[in-house]
Each structure stands twice: as C-alpha cells, then as structure tokens.
Length: 357
Image (cartoon, rainbow, N blue to C red; front, side):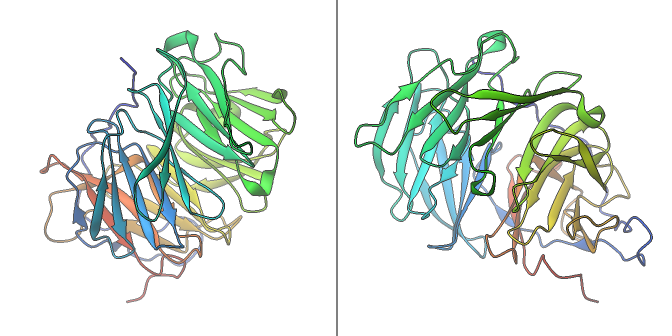
C-alpha cells in the first residue's frame, strides 16, 4: 500500500492574525466559507485558464473534482484509482495524472474530462508524483527505499515509459518533483519523508538525467511537503515541516537566497506568473494560514485566515493545498475544519492585491 503524506490536524482558532515584519500591521482577512467538497483528502491541484477550471485530485476515491473559478463544482472525473499529482499540457488541453492504484498514467481531455489513453508503468510501480518538462512527463513512483523516477515521452506517436532513471535507495517513498518551462531541462527532486531533508537537481535535457546538485537539509529543511519554481526559473521555493518559514533556493546550486517569514507549520507554497508568493502554513492561533508576498519581500502585503469569524470552529490549510490562476489574480486553497469530515475549496479573489477595509 502506498504511503501518503499524513494529514496534519492542528486546531486553528478563528481569531484574526497580524502581518509580520516592518510593514504596517493589518488584520488577516477572513476567507469565505468555501465550497464543501465530497472528499476527505486531496492530493493535488491544477488550474486550466483556457476553460477556467480547477482540478482537484482525490487519492482515496480515485476521482478528480472539477470546479469553475467561483468554486462551484461542475464535474467529477471517475475511475482514476489512486490519482495524485496533476499536470496540464502547455496548451491546457490535456491533463496527465499518475494512478498509484492502477500502475498507470492517465491522459485526460481537459475540456471534456474523458480519458484519451492510459499507459501502464509496470506492476507494483504505483506512480504518485509528477512534473512536466517539455515533452516528457516525469513521475515519482515506488515504495520505501525502492522508489525512483520514471518518464513518459509525449513527443512521439507512441509514448514510451522508462523506469529507474535515478538509482533506487535514495528515497523513502515516491519523491516529490518540480519542473517549469522557465527552467528548461531542470528537474528538482525531493524526499518527502526524511529528516534532514534531501534535495536533488537534475539536468534532464538529454536522454538520461544528469545530477547537477544535491543538498542535505538545505536551510535546515526536513520533510518536504511542497515545492514551486519561480517564473524566471532562477529559484526554488519550498514548504517543509521545518524550518518555520518558507525559504527560497537558487537554481541549480540550491544556495539559500531569501526567506519568506511565515510560522509553524509550513505545508504549501505557490508562486504566480508575476512572482507573487503564497506561503501556506498549518498554524496555531493567532497566526494566519496564508501569507502573500511580493517577489523578494521581507513582509507580506496580505494575510488570510481560513477560519472565518463566523460559521466554523477553526480552519486549516491542507498540504499541497494552494494554487494561483495563471494570471496571478486569484488563489485557490483547500481547507479542512475540525468540525467537518470533508474538505472545503476556498477561493480568494484579487489575491494579488492588498486586503481592503
């Protein structure tokens, strides 16, 4: 059975928090109550600006929920056993999804939700994480210390699956992956389950990945939960169990270059096309859940609480639970509340602007 990231059930108070740093202090804006989702666990998010849709994968039910930009559910894509990471093609027409419980990669039409193809990755591989680099979909697969990285080539008429691109024995489970068109030929790999944390940067411009840099406990990091590459392709942002802030590392040498102050416990990070950073935490009172920063800023221009002043006991952010729309105006968050079994989708409009009022 594939291990998944544990749910962090730390109670958050509904009290409003204060911004950090030297900037004038402002209260954390309470988010709306959000849309109730028919799932208790999510794995990943993907945004399609062409059809103005958000995709939410659920490993447990083997479904992908589809909402519009207002957070209303419009479709459920079923029969995706163990679906986790979601990757959209550059033209936003195709959704790629590794299926850990089907040992396959599903290729889905983003406009209709219909599966176009399903490519087997081999018995017992359990593909879980994914990152798209050019015309190659890389996927983290396997369990315990037998995990590795594989690939699905997309450029040819007959896609080819390759396994064992990175030697086994380095990862305690399917590794977390990050890639970006802005960092062409670069694949970042992280171990989610170890302390100290481990990062690797690979050159994937050729047929075989070539290790460029590796770092143990960069910036004091442990147990990586999320990663994002900045739109200029020069930096990697991470969220991990420690430290209690969101660091930025230069690519490809992984030198720590900046710190975005947040609090305990970092669980998510997302960066917009304009470089605005959403740093998400699963915190305790009175801290906010989301800190929003301009690129390279030392203090947030806005903070958000997922526990509205009325309506819920407390709210907390799910790991891997933040994503921007590509235009950088709207932010989506997946929240859980200690008085509800299921999750909620929270839409934060105008997230690229300071809070008003």
